[in-house]
Image (cartoon, rainbow, N blue to C red):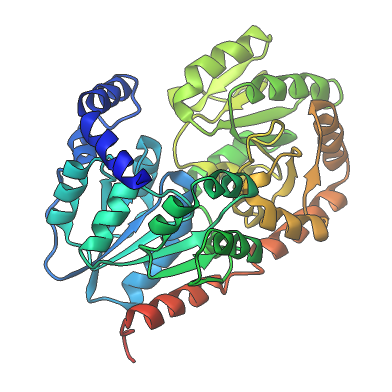
Length: 425
């Protein structure tokens, strides 16, 4: 009943949906030259032969699939690969990081005409959905066509579970479209089973299998030379409101470290100009990377408002604070800087990474601060004690590489359940 109402509403709301997408296009939230992909129109030719389709909603989910995509390409050369995401930032990142030969498209909006147009054209043999974004029309239409489907790296928070339990019949029907469900943690497995899913098992979190973020080595050498005599730290993947807090932390630390350089890398680089104005309003001297501003001795903050360069800044800074964590917003992935020899700090709200955080906390591989005052104090301690700084970075790196075998477990389950023949077998 609920799905029937959903399908009817998405059919009747066609004009509203189109108007909404047009507004997003004007705001830069839809791709200007690939807008038609959101209506199921393909912008690239479908290759001849079998096709595996992977979907990750946004940047985090897409990045977690990269290692699996490499594995699929190497071990299953007879299959072509299609990757879909739903955001402009994820598309820009995939353009830089997807292996040669992998096709990227925007996922169609979940209206039946768009979904059917997409599926009619691409005709995937296998569909792999990452984490928790579930589009009813896309799932049901894929299932009706006999496409083999798996939900991988599945997660289900207690908050989401509580919401879905009110619509247990609907979500059970939705999840029944998957032939295989692979969860990140035992708790995720338990939550899915409470929703009626029986064919689910825990194999671990694919985020552990991700490779090191890429970096322009020449640019890294240049920036290291520019900052060689300066203490520095990085606030990574910040969200609105956090940049001003980081500015206040800089003011406090600069009293003790006059040459301090603070790096701020916003999660959404398009906010760069507004962040610049906010920080200048606090009396800070800011160099904006997207405008190719040069660093000078008087520069307080390097605003790293570019896409796909976190690997560069993680290698440059020995201290990293994870954004989106001082307020109850869920945090950002600490594994990426941990792999690159960074000592880690975060706020108390890392609920999007509960299982990963448990591992970090048990090994004392991350420092949790409750506010900007504590953040300033901990950074002060790291800058004064290189031995402590190094020990913290080593602990974090050990955790980051501790579960890399999850990729093999996921791949083996897929091969077994979908009868895939591995190269050389």
